[in-house]
Amino acid sequence: MRIQEEKGFTLIEILVALTIFSFAVLGMGIGTVALTGTNADTHSRANAINAAQARIEEIKSMNNAALLNLAAACPGPAFGGIGCNDTSTISGTPFARSWRILLDNPVANMHRIDVQVNWTDHGNRTLTFSAAVPRLS
Image (cartoon, rainbow, N blue to C red; front, side, top):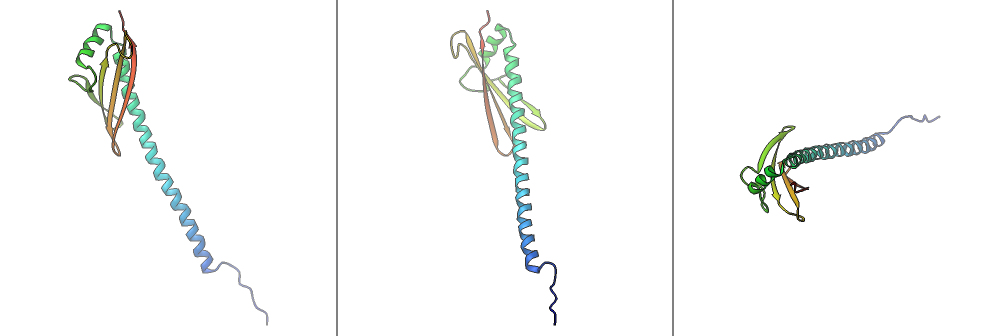
């Protein structure tokens, strides 16, 4: 009597293969979620940088008298005196900007502009940017 060899996979082999495949798909899903979160965080940071840079450029373009008036209204060391803050919405996220101007800092005849940007996405975020401008005559 001849024994016929059966061809194909056993139930155990199929279950093991499905388990391995499930772990691979689960790992890819977790990686995709993490990548999406990182991408959203990077997008928010880029928007905060753009908001701060725009305010720094506005202040740098002022003439000396306007800069000194703004410096009187927005002195350091604290952020956000009256008229020294605003809020802008970029891509649906509100960004609160506060600024201060420190005269003759870091050296004589130089003014330091600090802009702080606050926003909330997955938590409270804050970035601070600084620029130095020469005193104009």
